[in-house]
Length: 362
Image 1: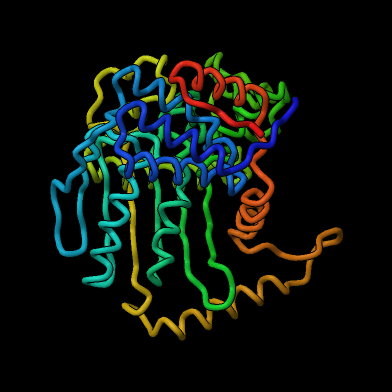
Image 2: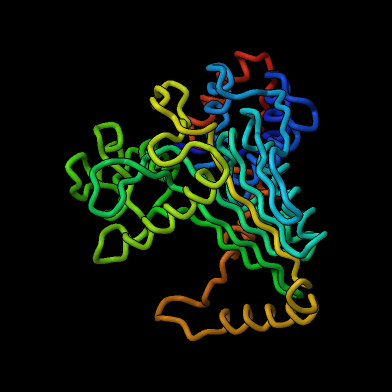
């Protein structure tokens, strides 16, 4: 499938104008744009501008509030619950992470759960906010049920990502950003656009059997937890996804399990929903609440260098540290542009026409 490489700056201007056209303030539109496009820069194309039309459809369906009154509804010196007022998760999540960081600055650590939000982009962007203040950042969110727990044919969990961002000294930060499934749904969507099969271990069919059909979710199939099957540790991926769901939603009063609102606006909302919207969870830990920051960062540099220098298997030149591939790709894409598949370009062109916003592809 053909690709078009579009300059990052062009996508920023288009996306910002589009968010403002649905009623977002200039500040919120700027934040939402930065969060959304950070996925494309870091090579997580499934969560970037390819999802823009999905956010707009949610707004058109009345499920996204472009002018939310985001507020803290409960707090202690180190914790808070935030109500996102059905706002864009791209806006609600940074607000909540800032609250966690403010609390960490005051008492050492900060922990914030969020209810009544929407899809928040990549987990990494929010966790990495803490790096600027010499803090460890933690970010997680639940998502609509596309994942079958080990031994189940029912879809009860989302891909439920976790990110932990840890600052270093001279070395780049350690950033582990991952779904708790073998593959995120967005990667499956990319295979669908390219008309390719999925690897064994990604999905199962409606009867719970392994399949390579990338379209199997449309016929009752399910994504698989990290590990793929019991013999390869899927019970561990299932447990991780469940932890994210509980921290993000049961702790905050958001919807959990099979009741999490679906991202596609055309999919009916679940019945009997127990909470409000989608849930997130954030943590911020001040390094010097544990030990002097300079000493910690020195040891982190040593840790990173030792792992990078590990003896490699044949055919590989180095051991990667979490965050390396994304950071390296970001520097390339900021300079050379972001490759977009034809279906994504067509979506953007449709939005440009609908909202009378210029889209520069060159």
